[in-house]
Image (cartoon, rainbow, N blue to C red; front, side, top):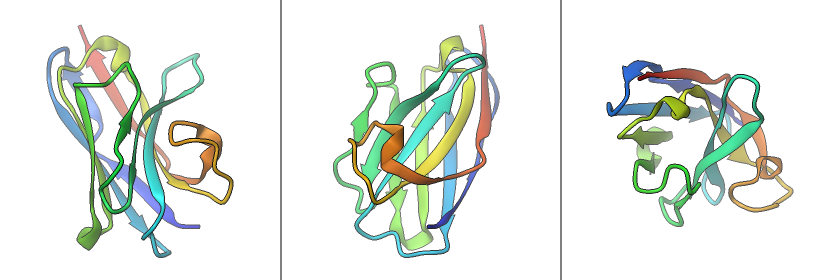
Length: 125
């Protein structure tokens, strides 16, 4: 497994943009899928987006399509989530995740074995 460390969260206003970063280390990442999930207070963990480490095959939850973009920087071992047109309902702790050995689909939490500690995103109205 690897180590994932998220950063870039904060308090923004509705309509603003924010970019989250995930620094990956501790293992080779080539060939696996990385993802962003989020969890709002009192709710379950929700998939946001996933991407192959190569940068191919980006997939998004319907709730963020057209507003969020996931990307990788292989040279720096980083995964990014660019968020625009933020809404109050985007408020959550955002987690970076790395694919595990059991695959259930790119937007399914059970597909991912290692997780970061999370970064808080708060969108005010």
